Image (cartoon, rainbow, N blue to C red):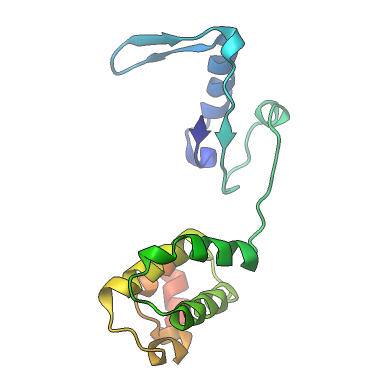
Length: 162
């Protein structure tokens, strides 16, 4: 089972989750349907967090923690795995776009773009512009579709120099 971005859930959610997993049953409130399973069928639960909020200690004690550090090799693998989604973008253009993405990440931003934003940005670039290397060689303030990479208006203003 995957619970994505648990730190954005209501404050009581982690403790409620522990309770439900211990009982191995829960009720779907909307349909009043009871769901239950044998305690022998303990699920494996993967939980992601952006560390935006501290999770309760009793909950954390029951977790195995693994931090995935942002790494250029992971970015390269992700781009390679999705290359068929980038239309007619040349390998050279993609390489240059990744460099521009990395340059954006080096800026002092409130919310740095992640690999997911890079992949979407490449898809948008493939769909929306007549691709020329010159469009990425310009300074960062002139990057096309910057709102795909940056999700904070102050970061966008910081980058484009307003």
